[in-house]
Image 1 (cartoon, rainbow, N blue to C red):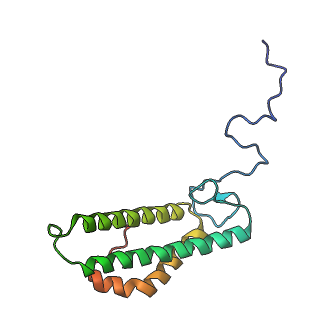
Image 2 (image 1 turned 90 degrees about the horizontal axis):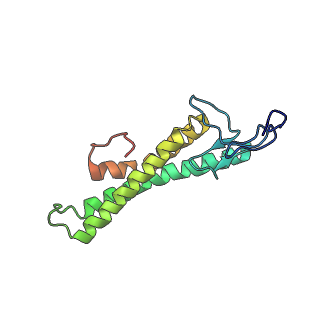
Amino acid sequence: MNHAGMNHAGMNHGDMPSANEPHCSMNMSFTWSYQDLCIIFKWWHIHTQMQMFLSCAAIMALAMHYEWVKYRLARRASEGAASPGRMPSRERLRRALGYGAQVGFSFMLMLVFMTYNGWLMLAVVAGAAAGYYRWGDAVASFQGENRSLACH
């Protein structure tokens, strides 16, 4: 069959969006743009300035919540400061699950930062700073001054 006379320009070929269809942009360099920005998931797709504002507020709240999670885990660890060998296995499991949740949470915030969007980066930093202002002194007193700025 000769396909030379067929026009396939208007067809959508698989998962590729057409030129006028919204799609998730993947920036590999710093940007301030909000258009066609997807945050971590395809369904968290930003189209408007209001969506961007609300997303920044949500990310700021999540970063604050991450600092609260660190506070809760440090507080729990300081309350039952028994050696790991003497700690009941149920408590060890609870601490391990809490630590796993904290690491997962930190990696999700790292992925937000890796969108290279300046507004989202500022939201993560502002939320972390606000959370540290609220709970950081308590975490430092539980853990000593042995804190790091790593993802987890």
